[in-house]
Image (cartoon, rainbow over all chains, first blue to last red):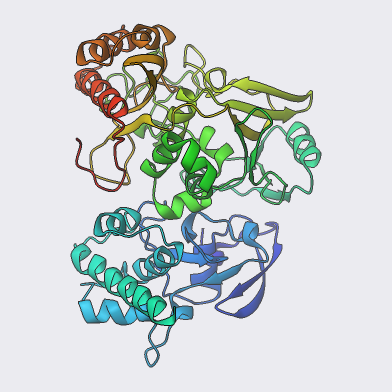
Length: 172
Length: 338
C-alpha cells in the first residue's frame, strides 16, 4: 500500500528513523512498508520496487547495518532504527568504493536492480563470510539481475574485497 | 493489505494476553512470510502483535551440553554463530541452503518454524485451497502439483512444509519451548508440525495464544558425519523439491546412530525412526543406504506432476548418506554434488 492511499480513519502511528544520517519523524499507517516509506514519503527513490514480495532484492537497504528486503519490513516495526539506502552510500562526486567498482566493471545494463545490488554487496563485504567467487555468488543470490550482468557484478565485488584485503594487510 | 492495528508488546505476558483478547491477532517478528501473505490477502489479521522487542534473542549453552536458541535469533546469526556452526554444522548448512542473505537477516528462528507452505494455490486467493479457506477444496491435487507432497498427504491437502532449517532440527531432535495462557511447555519438534489430515488449516499443534520462545538442541553428536543436500529448480534461492538431512555416528566401521529427515516432500519434516534403525549396527554401504531410503519413502505416492520426486528422493537420500559417511558434507556455495 502506498501512503497516498491513506484510508479515512485509519490508525496512524508515530515512527522515528535515522535515514542516511538524518533523523526523520513521521506518522504512518501500520501497513506501510519501509520501502513505501522511503520512496513515497521521503522521496528516496533510489531504492527500487521490483517484485514487492522479497524475491528480487531490488529494495535491499541496510537496517542497523544489516541488509534486508525493505518491501517485507513494516516501517512501524523499525521505529528507532538506522537505515542506509543507496543515496546514503555515495554521491556522483564521491562514489562509494562499491559504486566505483560497479562503474569500472560495467556491472549493470538497465540499472534497475543496481541500488539493491550495491547495498547488498556492501553488506556482503562487511559480513566477511564470502571468500571465493562461488561464495560471492551464493551470498548475492538474493539479488536478481534480469539483464544478466552477474559475472560483472561478481567481479566488481571481488575487486572491492581484494582492495579491502589489501588495505587491511597494508595497515597491519 | 487489509488494514490492521499494531501493538508493540512490552513483555511476553503482554503478548500472550493480547493474543487471547483478540482472536484476529497474529504475532509478527521477522515478517518475511507474514507480510508477504498479508499483501496477497492470504492472511488478514485484525491486529499484529510485534514481539521483536522481547528478550528472546541469543544463543546460550545449556547445562545438558546443548544450545538454547532464542526464538528471535535471526537465521543468519544462528548459522554463523561460532558454537552453533562448530557443533551443529548440519543445522548451519541447512539454514544457509535456504532463502537469501537478506531474508536470513530478517527471518527469526521461531518464525522459520511457523512459516507457511508455498503451494501456489495457497497463495492464489482466487482458487480453492483447504488450508487457506477450509472446505473450499484442494486445487493442487489435480492442478499444478510439481511441488506437492509425496508422503503423509490427505484428500484435503497436499502442501509441503517449506523450511530447510526445520529438516535439520528434526534430524537433530530439537526441543521447542513455548509459552501461552496456560504456562510454559516444551515439545519435541516432531510433535510441533502436523500432517494435514482433515484440518490442513492447522500447520502446527500450538494452542491459540502460545508463542515459541526458544529452540533447544541436545548435546552435539554429529559434528563429523553429516550432510544437508537440497535439490531445487535453480542453484540457489529456491525452495526444495527434495532435501535430505543426514547425520551419522560411526565407530569401528559401523553406524552407531543414524538420523535422517526429508524436506520438500510432506506437510512436515519427514522422519521415520525405523529407517534410521535399519542403518544402526550396519557398515556404511550403498546397499544399507538404499534400504533405509526405501523404508523412509515407504507409501510415497505422486500426483502426476511430482511423481519424479519419489526416485529423486531415493537417490538424494543415498547420496546424502554417502556424503555423511565420507565426512564430506554438501557445500552450500560450491554446488557440484560429489
